[in-house]
Image (cartoon, one colour):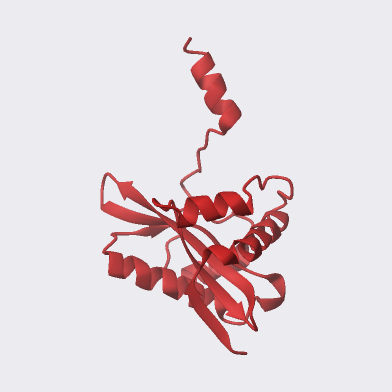
Length: 160
């Protein structure tokens, strides 16, 4: 298998969105994806990109991707958040996940970040084991906290 790991281009976003939808289905959230190809192109390739993306390509088909964006830690300074690392189901176990994660780590190292962080579902034991084998620390005593659009509106509505 001749795989190429490279930086994503705007023209890759239809295939990247297909991978995002595949991940949503795997995570039992088939209807949760709202982002469009146009959103991805605008947000990742405009004058002020909000994310950086690497893709894994085999025979001109994108079969994996890693999407990252900058954050800032009040304890550490600049960090990167790995939003998603996806390898299509038929290519899992081929080494592409490792190659994509390696590219993310090399990028973070070059950028001088103090940490790369991400979440993993507690039931996704293969991913947890993969990340732990790579030296990542899975912090099971932390819970993810989010406010979605409705939650933000309710929060602000309660203040008025």
